[in-house]
Length: 64
Image 1 (cartoon, one colour):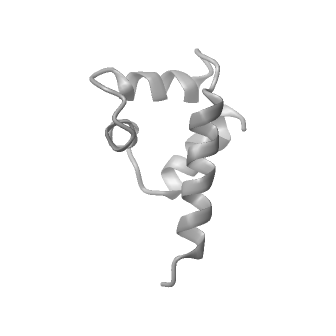
Image 2 (tube, helix red, strand yellow; image 1 turned 90 degrees about the vertical axis):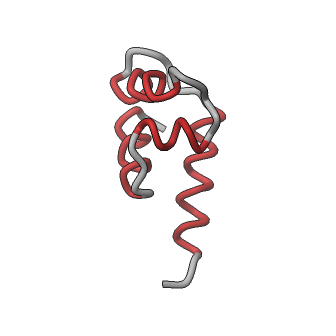
């Protein structure tokens, strides 16, 4: 997953950077970490990429 794909997934799930960090209990600097992943300043955590992919899959399976 690229940083841009991660950002698109987060936006598709209607999370701000801080809201996703809070959802994942990433602590006080979690929003900053997500921003760095999305801007390519830091390598995207593979567990985070997997988790957001699973969140998208689950959201797609929910009835409207």
